[in-house]
Figure 1 (cartoon, helix red, strand yellow):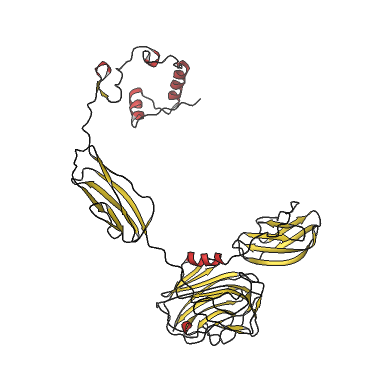
Figure 2 (tube, one colour):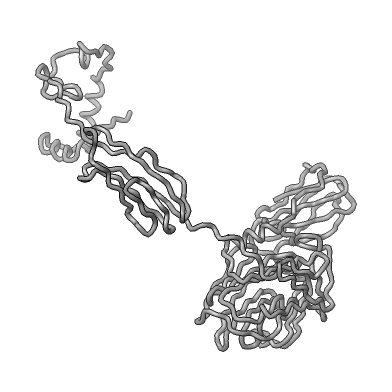
Length: 464
């Protein structure tokens, strides 16, 4: 059995001083066991037999709201009512700068007419309130509106949150979907020049993507707006390199002295912003043969790199603006010496889709929203029966090599497709879906979660 005793601070010391032993030793335990043997459950407790009967050693305490003891208990006198100020409502929504709201308050336990109320805000840069409770939102932040009696004897408080109004979605400076043509969808209508580049149905969004052969294909996107000084800039695109190459330019604006460039070299993606002798370099690992979303922003000298909607690199120049950069801009190659001092050429072999350039540095959520807005992949659209035989990839998780065992031959030829969690296709191959064990190799991919879709003429299999 376990016996719990709730005691006040100091009782242990008092007990030991009085009885000569502590409340933790063997003697204490023997005393408690003796007491426990004679304890009885009180079953006849009542108003006339408190504690089961007997004579209390001390008079009973008075009821709540009474003073005295025993037979001398008397009711407490009621206190004089205290004036109370209560706001009639306190909005729990977030306001925008420029919003207005009228608050009101009620005074209770006070002679009428009561003295005038005093209204104030704790931060007048966020909101201001007039003498009648009218509140106007002035700036982003949080503040409290306080209403009180003139002498400050009673008050109530309402907390308000204020946000800046949402920025309107910026229109791109240029937007080339490359859906079978070189047209720009913005009001600038800047149709680019395809130098050997063609279109392919292996796209990331829309109907087509730009196809570059890695030999002499490139796209001339030069325009006066891409040679003028800027404080802010965003470049974004879906890119898919066919194979590993020494140096392949994705985007180049500017040149050897001032400019902004994005390229893939070996198995890394590089970004460089260059102003005179000052440079900022960012780079991340790059995986070939599947679409990835790349976005680069320049904001008053701060350069950010986003990969599949996530910020993966940030650095800053000691200057805030990009000056004139007269070398013409290009996609898939460079027209002259680039920001890495590389020579003209450096042709890309692969695909580019949905290219956008903005005159403003988009925020992280804006980059992610535009990336998601171009996602059109839906897993398992074939509406065919999903097979349920021994089809679990194992080991899962693994270091990159998965096995898929089939107890029967399902289809002489099936599509094995791997997607990442953004919906981007990262691998596709045809192989016979025969009985036995199939190996799936993802060792060259980044760590993460992927979706396997195996599709045949008579089935679809989807596994994580």
